[in-house]
Amino acid sequence: PESEGSIDIGLVVAAHGRHCLVESPDGQRRICHPRGKKSQAVVGDRVRWMPTGDEGSIEQIEPRNNLFYRQDELRTKSFAANLDQVLVLLAAEPEFSEHQLARALVAAEAEGIAPLIVLNKADLGTLFERAWDRLAPYRAMGLTVLPLRLKGEDDASSGLDALVQRLEGKTTLVLGPSGVGKSTLVNRLVPQAQAQTGEISRALNSGKHTTTSTTWYWVDTARTTALIDSPGFQEFGLNHIEATRLASLMPDLRAALGACRFYNCTHLHEPGCGVRAKVQGEGCGDDGIAATRYRIYEDLFAELSAKRSY
Ligand code: GDP
Ligand code: ZN
Image 1 (cartoon, protein in one colour):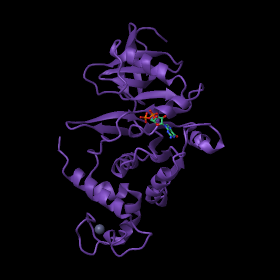
Image 2 (cartoon, protein in one colour):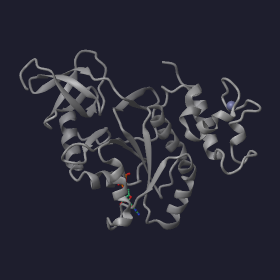
Image 3 (cartoon, protein in one colour):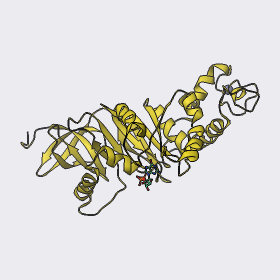
Image 4 (cartoon, protein in one colour):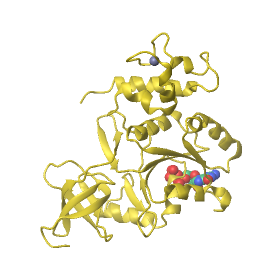
């Protein structure tokens, strides 16, 4: 298959700038570069590539099922594609930002991906209970929230088995703020992760070590279950989403949309809006929209309406 001129299909397992590490079906990996000014492949992309000496040239990116973005102050950039699931890892401590959680969930919803919330550090007693309670609105809107304890014995009470079952056969993007136990989890599920990360950064950055790139890991030797580890939770990119779509991407607000009889309603200021009437503490019972969630909707709506248009 190495003959010059033949086109092979491969999987992008890491990317740095315009360089990608592409894995062939036989497990061989090589550095590839996009031909000419073609668009950038991201981790999870299936690509058609051609050998050019020891390296390769990416001829074409196969159509994507979905695409995830991150943003910094200047621009929005895609970083992962073709996911089956997004795992948002939180912990009893440090205290998580519900705003960051909501951003990740909206991004997943926008791409039609089922999110999975995991709350780690179940050994931390009251702190854990408090965090678990803060996630009540997310359970109420039908999302799966799994408890996890990565510290101590890995027995039936750790929750790891239940989590592993949810990962099997899927490609899961793992996200989380720092300190929640993300590296502990990845290293537990992929014992050779650290060695692989070293190899990948050496291959892509000619010796320099960077830990801040998105990386694909196979969990099983049969290569059916994969994790994509990605740093940077806070800068989840939502700029590509229209503000008017936002309510439909938040399951609790979406469930209330039928109660709003206005066309083109933002559910923010309109008097008589049925969605606003369902916000808890504003004349509605416990089965309505949590006040914290509505505040997040207001904030995200403002952000998406004000987004730069380039
Ligand atoms: P990361 O920043 O998300 O990659 O987090 P790490 O994997 O480095 O873990 C952060 C800290 O949390 C470390 O000190 C871990 O030992 C600790 N940690 C991980 N899992 C648990 C857990 O289940 N319970 C407790 N108490 N600490 C944990
Ligand atoms: Zn409305």
